[in-house]
Image (cartoon, rainbow, N blue to C red; front, side, top):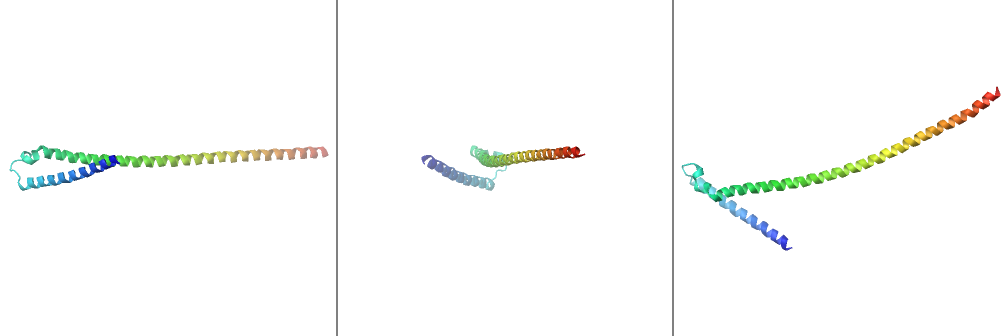
Length: 136
């Protein structure tokens, strides 16, 4: 519970800090536009300040963190989808094996019945030949 509260406080602080820094950055940029120096903007005290340079890298870092979160979420979704596909594939393979076993059994029974029928036909024909040949 304390950890959750601490995390919430940290999120709140980060959000408030981000809002304040964004406002400050906007104000500084507005100032820079209203009071440009005639020389290049690189010499401008605001743009050459350590804060402005850190602010730009902080924005870049924030974008990278968002990208990482998005990619992590996408990866998690893909893993779940892959897991589902594997499970479906496993079920299909299992059903296919059952079907193949059933087919083999039916084929074996059919061959056995055909062999029995052939055997029965041979047995029925053999006595007839003996009885017809004996009558002549």
